[in-house]
Image (cartoon, rainbow, N blue to C red; front, side, top):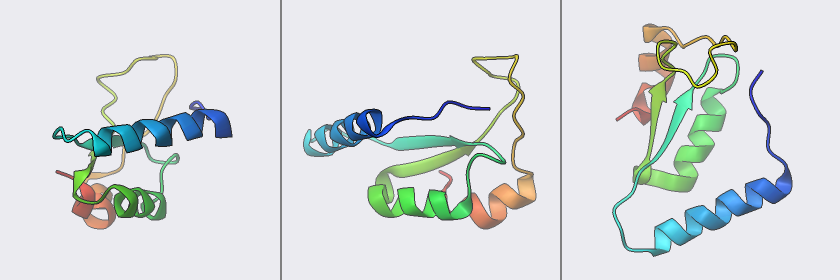
Length: 88
């Protein structure tokens, strides 16, 4: 389905997050959530890590980088219900 990352890549991502947080610039970390790839508990953990600087957006099948891969968006009820508190 999607791409996975290894520990070395994940470590680089965390390093980048730390650099951004310490930079003093205004920032927001954003995740496009996809049904079947993301869970409410994963989003909650990311929000706990990034706090008020974290937001999600629902997957939009109209705007894609790889049209040959089909993903599913969360229904409006699911997105607004269990995930809506993280949306901005």
